Length: 329
Image 1 (cartoon, rainbow, N blue to C red):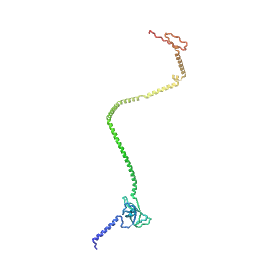
Image 2: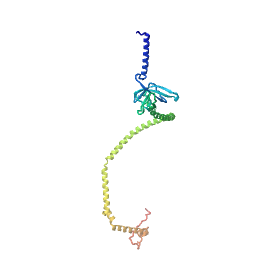
Image 3: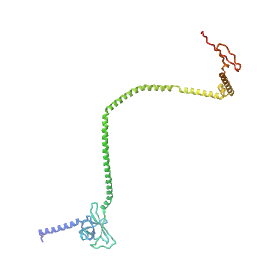
Image 4: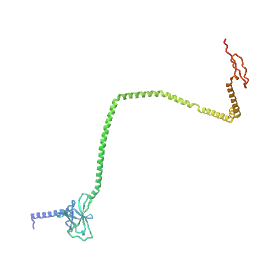
């Protein structure tokens, strides 16, 4: 039987369409060679979940998301249909947790099987749940950091404001320094002549100091010579002589205290002391009587005639003849 070209083209087109259909479903994750059970789960929001996203059990892919329908009569909730491998027995009370698929931000369904519950039938509803995933963890960790960043920003703003104030103060200080510099420059300009005279006087003073140094050097040499002369004196012999003299004086005082010699006897002999005391008393009486009765002891004769000595005088009187001066002489 001969097949026409038109039939061949039709058969090829049907085969091509069938291959495209099954290849597309395979690339979407549908296993066209195995059977699966369908279950549904209701979410308030799916956070970017799309059909063909995986359904995993303990990290193993056991199905896929078949489709997502919106329930407008139930406040726009989302009905998600899951294709799960028929070999997986899903008990009543099992959960379908919406979770992150990875760092790139994809979504997937994670099954939590309740093995104690009775098996669900095809088309039954699973319990829904959500897992924060990496995004929630990042948000949880990032919030304290953001709060610290806010506090740091506030503190930096305060520091910047303080720097602004400090800049104003520095500007005022620099303006004052510039004014002071100008006044100092003006003062220098006004006193430039005085400064020159002062520098000239300082130069003259330096020259005078140099001349004075030349004059002082001989004096210092003489002072050194004088010091050498003092060092050359035999001070030790002089001190020895002085010590010997002091020893002799001490020995003399010791002899006087012990009664040796004339001074010692005069100091220690009481009889000699009494005799000297009596002689002093008699001499005192004699001098007193001489003052009161001088005529008993002294006779004045103008013409050279001697008076008779007084009979009442107990002591021997002395007659002093005072001759008159000769007028012819």
